[in-house]
Length: 219
Image (cartoon, rainbow, N blue to C red; front, side, top):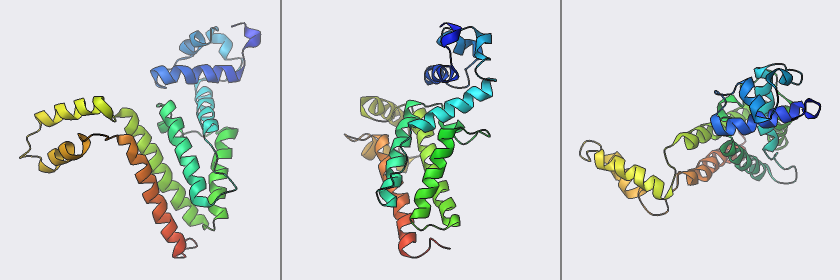
């Protein structure tokens, strides 16, 4: 790529593409330069260092996440955001451990957090309850993304094969509950770990909704 056509945005986009394939830990300036067909030293004209690239990559992912809509009630608005965030983290499996790690957040990152906080505040959540709600929701989102990204399989024939092989090596008399769960749940037709997302996030929202009904939002 000719140097005069290179931009910081193109460097970040190339780094995101590369991280999607090899993970963020394996990123180097040289590998990013190869990805965007540029010279390694040229990159430093557009980004200060690798940390600045990671900042930009995280901001890039936040920009993909749909903000809570203003024109719907808080629960549905947060659900829109959570589903979009889960999809973004699935597209970028490297991102979950980095999303809240940056000390120089970009515009999309700040906009995202401000919008989520605003959604809770418009719904009448106190500052303390807003903090509780945001924390427990994102703990679930990031944890689910990490688990989904690292499982050897999540559903279908691949899951049946992995779980079946484990079940064969598992003495049922020693681990009766694990054997029962594997045989009577995971190995049943239609099982998919991904389906647990909707159940989990709605359980959390149910709890927050009960807190709202019980006037606990201002405590």
